[in-house]
Length: 236
Ligand SMILES: *Cc1c(COP(=O)(O)O)cnc(C)c1O
Image 1 (tube, rainbow, N blue to C red):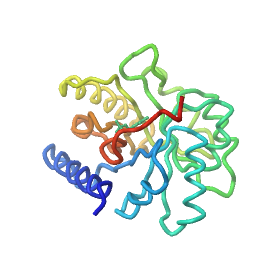
Image 2: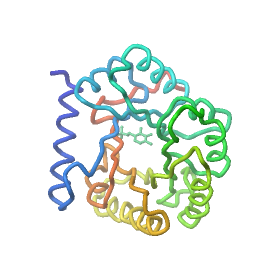
Image 3: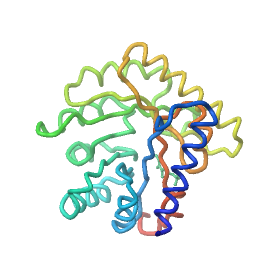
């Protein structure tokens, strides 16, 4: 078995352990494999281990991978999630090639993705990115802006609102991680009162997955723990 396949097995059993430890239903947390900077053969290995959902951060790199797998491995039926910052001039490529977008934090982005979604594709599944740690440099809407953006998204015919996403400040302390994720989970609960069909809380990465699951994450985004450390030297 390849190391990528072993890593996926390991993460999958870790997810199952944490779910059980905190009394959550089996299979209530989906694994999103974050494959940014990683080559197609690494993705193929993960797919051969049964992984279906992949996350990409860079538009052109992501589109190249989507097209490669559509052409060469259509039988795998991979699902592609865009999880990086979206510039306005790149929304068309995202709307045309991805299944999900986790990083909507402006009306304009939502509107453009809706207008550019091809009519022969299913709705784009979207999450609102929330700046939960209140860092000035982070993307994401402030918690008090969530409802206004949700209202716009739910009025757009080609987008389906599925929930919230956040990338909290990077801290090692489990209690601090948990408190932050619980704030996001509380916002999701409030949003669910108005939009009962939303079902996705995208939170937790390689370094804080356990706290995220404890707090109610339904989708963890894991890169390093599956594919190893990333090399950004070609991205500068
Ligand atoms: C890179 C990235 C991840 C994965 O991070 P790891 O620490 O490698 O697991 C998850 N979410 C987002 C938004 C990312 O950009």
